[in-house]
Image (cartoon, rainbow, N blue to C red; front, side, top):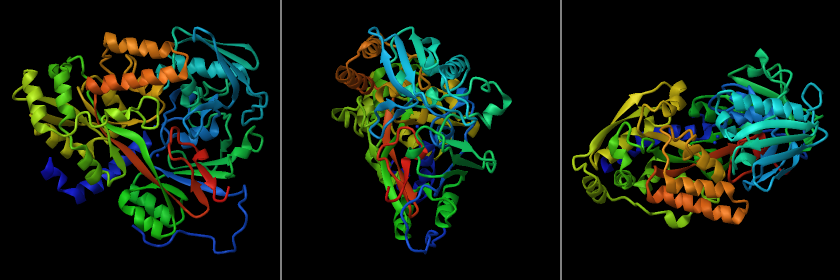
Length: 519
């Protein structure tokens, strides 16, 4: 592994590009940025924000939305029932209040009375019901998040009632993100919904939009919370290449973009403000085949522990992430309820101990496994390959087209996958990674003791007690080596004069992350 990590210059350049993928999942010119040389004036609400992203939304159909950088577009044109504030807490939004039944199986939401679609038509509970029912019954990334919802009804024009088969601790958080958008019941099934949906949010897509290239959105002055959105026009420009993004920033073509760590000093010297978000995702080797269906060795806890001991996490952060990150033994948000600082350092870097564990498990000569080579993994593959080879595990990487990256996880074709796990609130992270329906649990691994923890946290109404239960879940995942977390991956946002990037923790990227300087 040391010999691989010594190739710092080439690997750093490649890995810097790879870390941008983390921002997609959930964010060489040397001239100064374009700036207004006229006397400064008080910030106005007529300014324009332009953001560079690496990929366009796959769809704007509410049932097909994906989180990550795509939300800069869809979260601008759709309202969500609830919202997540800068501290990661759920707050009212289109729904001004909510209440659970005592058994946590009925959720009642009350809508605001001043909601409107971009057409001017009122938003009613029937629109919410139609959107949620369509998402619940249509295959897509959001469908599984409503798996416990058995029905959605509208007793009156401002009330929505969700019935659940069992408690879902993350439901409120889901309704604050892509699962909770509000579409127009009359046009949801229209062919135009994928590209030009009728929106309920603060912005409307302009005719200047070029699908897949640039999304131009104009603020709706009739939106109920228009005052919270200081930019009159928002442009989301798709620029796949990171160097090209930086060039666009330098040239004044965009006012905000993610930059790579080696560009930080240059950007700051050129007059840009650079803000570091220390943890936006966890780089993790997902040990998906814990049942041992493809690779029997992975069913043995000692083998999974050995894999955790194979990585020099400190050196990976230093050499491959340019220090914009933090070594970790857990996959949960370091600012969230499940994170337990006492678990850090559980494994460390110990190749000899790893080989002893493999021998104890019956694999003194190691074993082989095939993993998908994706846009996430490609630039980390030399390090992963060498680290595992050093303890006796031979990895073969099978190329996967970029458009099939997510499908490679769900396919059950690969026993392990290198992935950027987006950080969120604890319930969502558990739901995305460890429940039987989880995206990152394709083999549907279950364990009675772990299932009891999941059931306990779902049935616990007290926030403090539930937080303690999440910490127990995290402890279980680390001690039993369900996966092999490597590092928290950070990001660097550079903004031009006049634009501020606000959050230190990003849950759902939206235009509310940005403000006019001085506001």
